[in-house]
Amino acid sequence: MSIGGRSRLIGALCHILPADYDVILESIMTALASTVVMLLLTAGFINEPGVFVGCLLALIAAGVYVSSIRRTTEEDVGSECVTRPRYPVVFAVVLVGYLLFVAFAMTHENVWTSRAPKSQWGFTSESKPGTCNRRPLPSHSHRKTLENYDCFDNILLIVFFSHARYGANLDYHREVYSDYFPNILYIGPASREDSGFDHSYDIFVDSYHSDEDLTDPAYYKMAGRMAHHMLYTALQEQACYDGYLWVPFDTLLNIPRLEKFDQEHFWYHSPWALPVFNPAQDNSLSLGLHAPPVNVSPDPSINLTETWRGWGPDWWWGDPHVGVGVCMEAFWKVPLHLRERLTAFTNGETRLIGGSADTMYIPGRHRRIFMEVLGLFLETTCFLEIAAPTTLHLVVPPHESILFVDHWWIYQPPFNASFVRQKWEEGYEVDTFHTFHWGERGDDNVWRANYENVEDIRRLLRESAERQQIVFPVR
Image 1 (spheres, helix red, strand yellow):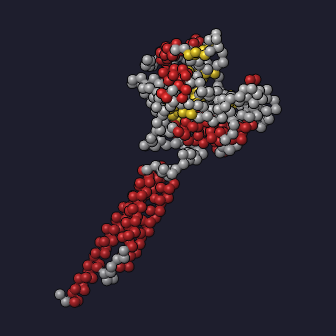
Image 2 (image 1 turned 180 degrees about the vertical axis):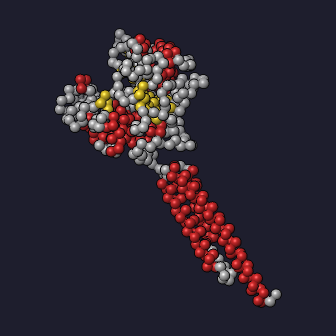
Image 3 (image 1 turned 45 degrees about the horizontal axis):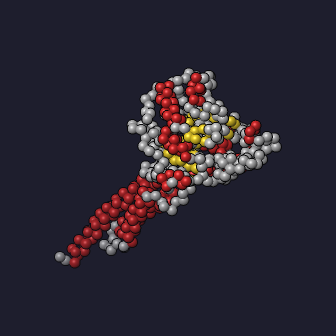
């Protein structure tokens, strides 16, 4: 072949091969860029800023490289065949490696992430991870639930003790309620090691401000005044549940009634809550046959301490150590839009909410925001029965209802299932009540457990199931 013919053949190949090479490579890079776009969108949904930024950089890099290929192709058209520089190939390899790293980061938990929840000062729900691994509960915390009963399989029952008075209180409680709640966390101020090794893991210990001193009337330090720290601890340590039911060990739970509550909503005896349908009652709201709701505070701009006569006649509002004055220090740190949510309940007036915190249900999707607001109150010595109810009313989204729990707080006997039957006769319902006694003090002033209370609760649950017209298993 002549020199001229060979030059014409090489020229033809140089015009064909670079073009085909560029088209193939550009198609590959375009596909990679599309993949990055999908990763970018996914990263936005999982709320991982690092992954989001990484995907964005990879997307920009892919776009720049594809653009450079086009410019190089246009410059090479009509030119002699040249050796391509190595940097585009290296760049492509690095980009692919970076994409693999981003994909790995999206599918693996960051072990350096702090245990403290990320700030979520809004009403958006916390999405439930697809692969959320629950931490194991104490090894002796429960036994198997009754066969074919699964209403509370994804609910964590948090049972708190203000004092380390376990014994039969815990054993009887577990015997009754573990039939229905497979996940129970008992939490209190001390371990149960005095009962031996077999019970040494029964209690998750949280002793924060759990000391008690009732000798000074001016500073009546009840052991449970900061028990909401236990609630915070339980929520922090035990993620991945659909909901959290918070009760003390001496609150009776009417399980057939609680079955009827929507687990996507908050439950509390709020004055703004909606009642849950009850086939045993006339469900007309005008009848008002419900337990008393929680209270609304006086105007916190008034110095309530000056006229406070003690927690007996005036409750805790004016207490200088745990009352409104202390709680407002936390309240003003709550973001404005959450405070406005509370004032929507109270006709635009700044108020706190106070009353029994012995039955409260928190949907799992609101766990994080509830913790963050409750944490502000825990930075003070605000009393449990002001901090927890106020937090609930601050964080419930405007479009969601609170479900009314017919919760009774009693200080006169009977402290057993007979109280529920009495209220039924009067036309009321009892979803829960405090104080329930698992035993009584005898003539010798020694407290003794009474197993008859276990059997009587089971009889009560059968009776309640008949009232609620449901099939309900009882051991």
